[in-house]
Length: 246
Image 1 (tube, rainbow, N blue to C red):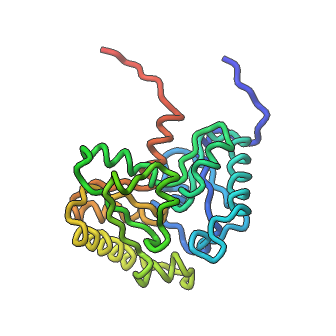
Image 2: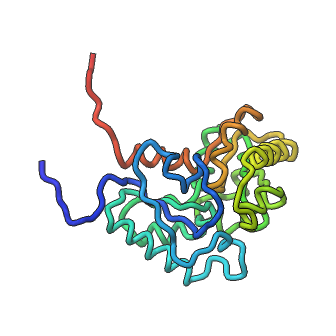
């Protein structure tokens, strides 16, 4: 066996590009390394604030260039696949994937067509998002979602007090996790009231996976989130050898 060197870091198969945030990233959050049972490489995209997806500039060409630059740096450092810390990066999926030679999976929204087919194309996919008002056609087109074919139910967390103040406004340094969990569960129940034919949830936001279990217990439905996707891709790029045949 021969192994090529020339890099400073090894063993971190998944590279994670984060916004610049100040609020606490609790276990289960995409940006908390303890979330994973495998090594990950977490970096910040320069000059990309938490609210880049809903501020006046939005996903402009300068910000896209920063994302591509960060992805290429991660690739050069040896990661085998690249994800992000915000589901609204979906809008950059094509451009970033074309800029590197390794898999890029910018957003859990990529799972929506798969989940739709898993449901036998009969049920609605419920999307919980950080900002329903900002999630639109450009994001859907970038990840292969046709709302005319895939029925969606979308509810945002932007009107929930604790989530808004901690995550969106970053006006609180400390987060009341119990309060935030109750808000996420309430949002999921609200979605089911609005769209009773919902058969599964996909969580757009990287701050929601800590509450996936609570939503599943409250609704009885499958929950697909950022961490679901990252674990799935990890097993694809770091396959294991099987032994012990009977």
